[in-house]
Image (cartoon, rainbow, N blue to C red):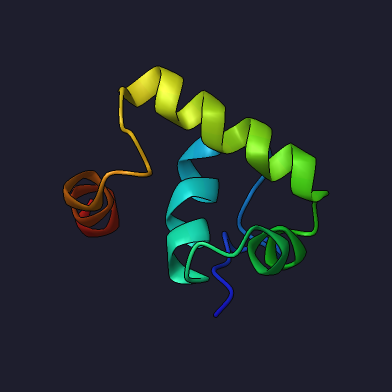
Length: 70
């Protein structure tokens, strides 16, 4: 599954797009990074940034469900 933003891959440098796509790719860093056309470490950085901004712990199942539905 690959999300788009109308200009190609979803990403555009935004942690907001990276977290839901990471979840859609079954939390597989390599697959999600490839879908976003970015390096795996870049995705990890974006996920950390997303967690820092939102306070969402992406390792917590309840939080994952909330993020998925938003």
